[in-house]
Image 1 (spheres, rainbow, N blue to C red):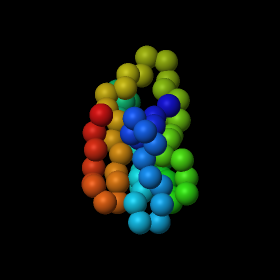
Image 2: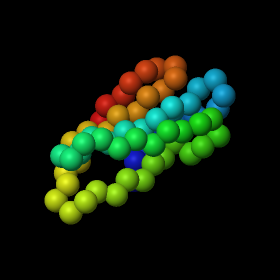
Image 3: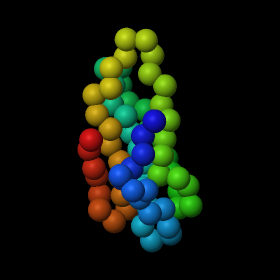
Image 4: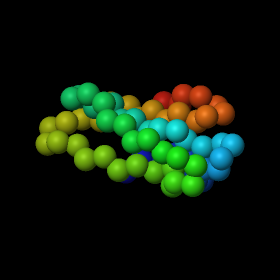
Length: 66
């Protein structure tokens, strides 16, 4: 499970997370979000698949990597 921000990121018409992507040892998976959605996403990894990075794109502040 991925949540953007230690406190929940705004998800309003003028400021929201457009997408969350996970990079794993087997590729990428993305969840697209809209204003009003929760800034969270769930991804299922296959057995042996390793998480490499998590990316989120804010319409105001751009790309973030964790």
